[in-house]
Image (cartoon, rainbow, N blue to C red; front, side, top):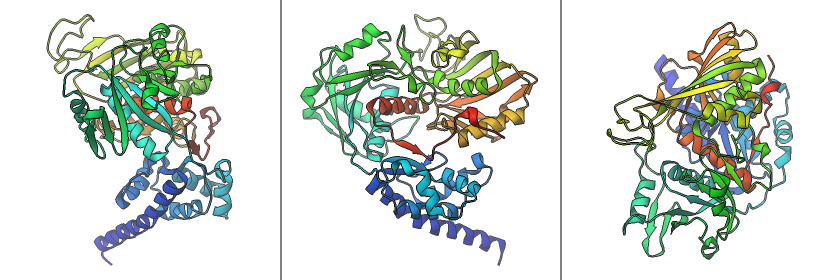
Length: 485
């Protein structure tokens, strides 16, 4: 057999296995609202080639390609069980089974998924309203529409904006349909102009035109106990955001920017357990705070951070001018597409709101650069103990594989990745292992992050948490502090 023939045969065998997996994946989703993944790569609406690619991707984390022969038997066991709504990582189950030295796969799977075994039930969706429909608002809409189809736990009911002309709803629908950075909407979008409704993949989104967040009667649209996600950035303190709570049908308000005063700034995966039932106003902090906080916390817990500086290389935002013109902020008036612009960031100080032990240990600055999306944080740290590059990278790689913040921190060690490779990343931040620098107690980490899509996924995780609609993620993982070598 020639080498070329062997390669082709191997590929065809993989496709054959993936094709056998497809109906099992669909059955789990359809009958149990169970979503499967391979080390965080969701197997939703996928093809046979997508499945092969997901298993191939595993080598970046587990150091070897995950054989489809290991995950197909797990899927066969899963469809035998009456499972409740959950997100189940086939890659993690395969690795854990291999390490366990167990021989009965069925018993092992049932033991790992015991908490959702026999818990199949219909989930009542929670209502979500987006107040504002800019860059973040439209990405939140895309994610919410996909999440409703995937889990059924949250549903986008309405978007509130100020009317900007007779064709406003058509413009809004067009912006949702097409995106210069994130590509076309995955599905169909139609407009019911007479009733001010955008229909996206079967989800009816009521467009509400209003200037006053306190005077909207959401119950008139059948909306109740809604979470209002304010992505305008217009109000950041409790007094301003409380206006949402005065509208009928609203239960909670979530800000997609750093909150001021006593508002809790939540970085999901780090301090979301601080959310109390009585919290009616919360902040999802900033994209940069979400990117750096998980990495800083695990490094501080493992090695101790004496002090550090965070330099953010950040894509330009809508706040900057396209051409040189007046701007109330220093330097931001200069053309965003032509210049690197030094500006301030509160992200370094904001870390301490999620991780109090980091208070006073960090300084920060930012450089806006002429790219439309994906940013990088350079963490220049002085630790309490000496470290080696390989040691730190091994720890951070294990965090992405074995810890309970694997949705927040990803890891990559590829010599050719650049910013556009991270467009669409669902993680809060991705550590670039090849760029890590260590010298005694001095450590420099480079963290990529999609400051639009990655952040928006963090926001949705909070929305699901406060709505009681967060899917169970299995198998359970360790706290990063429990990782051992």
